Length: 630
Image 1: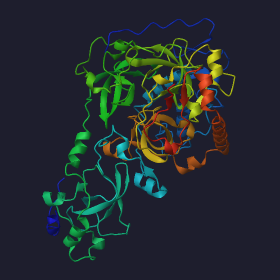
Image 2 (image 1 turned 30 degrees about the vertical axis):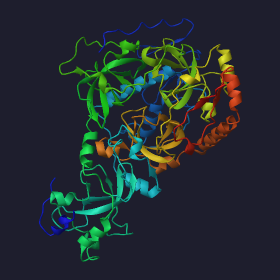
Image 3 (image 1 turned 90 degrees about the horizontal axis):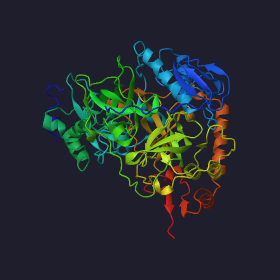
Image 4 (image 1 turned 90 degrees about the vertical axis):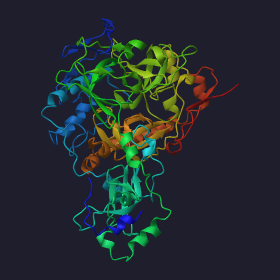
């Protein structure tokens, strides 16, 4: 194992789609005012007058549906972009290194119609497409995960939390104290030489290393990606004929370095001998360019379209919609995303589908095999099952920081449901979205109340604070049975405060520095460092859009750094007061007992809800609710 040390003085050189057409759109009720923008028709339920123009993208729309109190922007995306461009015009939202983030808090209780947000989002995407040829993403300069973690004493989520990421299922017992062989940078020899180092701290894929022999001296500690090509198990130099040379700073400490290494490394752990091979195998992705898939239409969430895989980076797919001639109309998602499916999926379950104008496949394009896609759990819909009109709570796919009052609008095959957000739906159902019955993004009535999460009531609903019992009675509707929801909670390993890299699902091409700020069973609240809380997103603990620290470096994907300190300091005191008021509101809701919920919501069914565990106690195998046997 240590024969490589004997050759340290030698001059050894180093080695280097479906044919089903889209469903007919129902005619708009004559009682609703109609607003036409860019050739598309949108309805505005309450008929309030007044128009506004977005200062970012130029979209004209109903003033009351615009974002923020000042009504200057049509969407959160445009608000972000404007605040960024005011500092550096060439940088798009969340890509900037400088720029002041928006400080106006979105109204949570008075939410703009989803149809207006859809229109704004479509317009914003069109703006991005027009700018794509002239504006490129600005490289991240100056950000270092190592410095960021060291200077703030942060903790990162372990690789084992991310089963979909490279090495997520075969990370083993790599931990602090493991020894590795790495290049020796404290050396004046003209050739590349190596030395042994120990892991002092782990942060995702990244490890803080200290050369053997430095004891408690951290002056030459350095960060390195454990899955990188320059890290090897102890013994690699001996088998590869590479020289082991002690760092120049400590070369004088011992006369017999070979004996020192034998003493220090006896009984120590190192990487498995096939570690690099496992890394390579875990970074092989079955999806290939030119494969055709069905993916959600980002401008009309109620339907899917055919798209073609343009590129694959770390398992993330850049999909270009088949009708996009200049290949700028794209959509980013992970290969295990629930938003993509095999060709023919929509027809098989009864989902709306936009038939392509392209009558035959283009040369070289081929359908992705169905076995490549993530399988959903089989469900038994023969007995008691979800029905149209049932109420529930659901994460709003267009405002992922909000869990909203929602309704099942259509029951599809294979356990899929079409869901709409109450009070914010388009008349033609174009903003319905599809969740599977086992999705961790839908919840039974009362979930937010029990877990002290702010529930977003229907837009325009006057009886506040919102009470499910009153709402169900007023709408003459029933709650979806609790027992139909997914109650599995894996032992995921996340804790509040852990750092990670997360996709901004409102701009899915961006992967950002992020933090876990809340844990409710399997639900994680993801905060994007340097940005206000209104941009937080609720994400499942097994989401393929979460990655360990160092994932971007490992795969070559661009990481978006936190907003600068000056921007963080600029958050107004009024925003902080609002946050404090909201937290007090949550505390007030906690007083409602499980007995009251049983009486009001479940109308005599023998169910009781577990009181919301604290964020620190939510990690573990449990269920949201337990049925009491008579």
